[in-house]
Image (cartoon, rainbow, N blue to C red):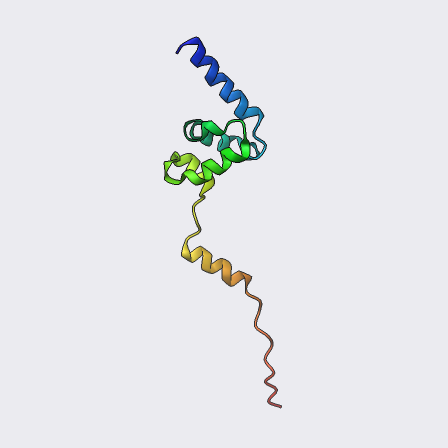
Length: 100
């Protein structure tokens, strides 16, 4: 790698690390997962963190599997979703059956 290319790569990493309040809010693992995709797919938006995040969100299947999981976490299974819905339902009202 030439000196100029090395400097450009270093500068891009420095800008990503320092100038991304929205993207930088993720965990270190999320940033590590998405930094290569940010450079590959959204480099034209550096240093604008909001535009980089929007670009990554819109990249869909072009993202690496690790970065795709950051922006599109796996959904709960149907069984888990039904159990969560049942637990959120209010209890039935008391019956007014007074057979006295």
